[in-house]
Length: 544
Image (cartoon, rainbow, N blue to C red; front, side, top):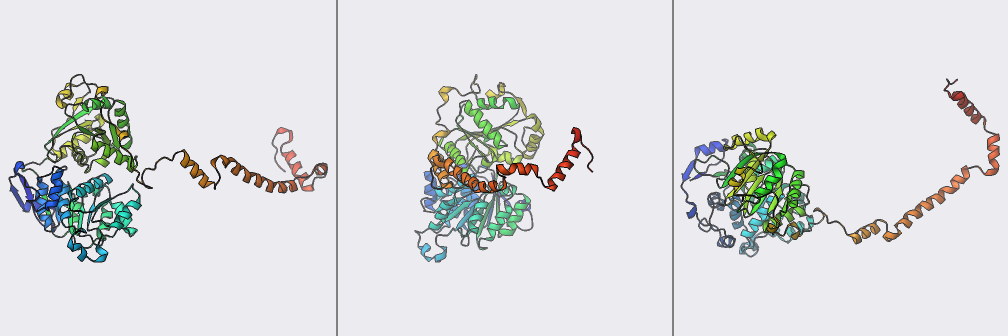
């Protein structure tokens, strides 16, 4: 059963709107409509079919027909249910590409300028959304560009100058390029705010408001969010025109998690976590796995520990340069590594096929973080397994998450790496240890994926020996590195020679030394007498 909500926002809250207009209709997943039946362009449907995507999911079934009419939308659905194509297909269909006759009729200053803008909270999510839209629109010839920090400005500016139809980016880089007048948003006719609740949590709403002010008021605006806090509702009231609020959920299902995810919550001792983790990663049927930690240091430590145990591991966290982060994600997507350790920077929107296991190495901070972490598996109709480790001191925090999401795990089971329920619950072969056997180490590893050179703002490549020589010679003139000692010594000699005459003038010659000692000035005599009196007999005396 699908709960379909359609109601223009007024001064009432979103929940009030849900109460006033609710329509339910049974939907058989095997008879879900195709994208062509929903009104999608055949070229878009053909591109999706080439990727194995033929039928729409509930949120897509609700969004696409209304969005094609130009209606402002608020889309709300569980994570991993296909929201990207829900706004991506209508967005692509409204683009006027250079091969269309209408393109020549556009004003000259509008040709080649962005016609659609998608704002995302994180770099990884922006890159993922841009990739999905580009693949769906590749047959139509839609030009898509991802702009975000960590990359050099020049390639992005060059692409903008060559002409772009759709921009997908993070707020900071969008504002930077707009302020430099390299990005013209005055011709945008479709605006999408993806993961709006995350942008609220990260403090991006003021930046989003600045971006909206740069876009024409006559536009279509679509906002997508897993949750609808009050500030997001206020944002919708200010910047959207009679939006339709769409929610996709099973009738009577009040749980926020996807039913296809098998969840386990265990109370684990910190000293036993890595050993237990190594055994979980050897479960039968496991393909790709993601491990989430709270901190950057913990993510790197877990990655190092698993690497020592023989697993092919990559990591994504804030201490890495953008090139290293993208290297790890590419290696993970292509299967060169089958384990990705990450902080919450990767918990939003990273859509990788065949992720069967998600492990929370530490208890999440709140229920939203938990939802988005485990939402990396069980996506788009697949099944998955989520395991959460809870420390003794985090039990109270977990119980708050359990209460908010109405989960049946109020008291996590005390678990060790040798516990029977670990093997039976996750289908781990008996006798499995925490180290991967050498015969099973078949992945190429992170080193098989090259690090892309991202330019001046990416992680800089360490200069080789010759480059350092060139750098030193540039700093010290045209001299070679071997002459550095001489070039630094000569100025000091010169300065010494210049000061030598001054010293010679002030220093008395040998003939005059006796005169200087025998005929001191009256002032010198008085000073010496005072000094003798103060220190007579080695004891301090009161001065006269």
